[in-house]
Length: 190
Image (cartoon, rainbow, N blue to C red; front, top):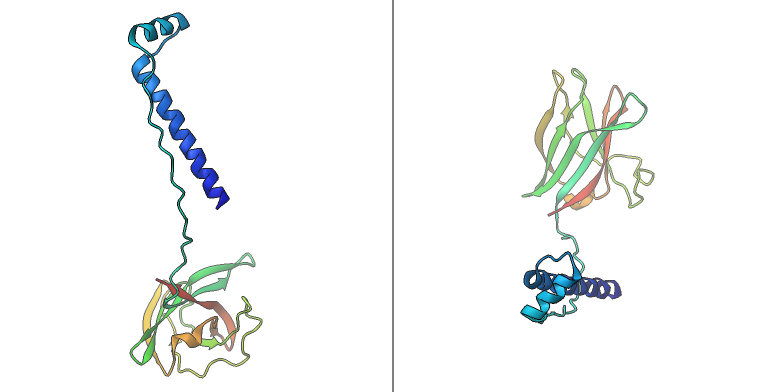
């Protein structure tokens, strides 16, 4: 609150100084010599009074993000050629009538390979060290592409609630268990 009052005081002083200078320049004009300025004031009078407005203290309310989730989203990552990771798309989840809609939008899938999707429930640890060792018992689709490019498709998953997916780990495996892609499910706020 003290910082806000200091900022308001600074703004008030800046406005007052600007108004004073503007009043002088409007009535006095530009002068290069003090004698000419004194003569001008003698002929035309002194400066006009300037209205100075005081700023009123305002309470600042901190904005909070809306907590109602618009769904859940997992940013999917894969290993890149330099030993790091690269984003390869996302998997979004949205609660629907009696099911969860799963919208898959991925790139860099290998043609002719079958990708199995698995979801593991995790705690609030921030990484995947606190995830369950067994995946959730869900009937998830197998994804495959015939040619390189972008894969987008929406699926319906029955017997699942979006709230069950908070902090979950989504994994795409291929070739008998190789983790080709992974991501952590986070709420999307409106």
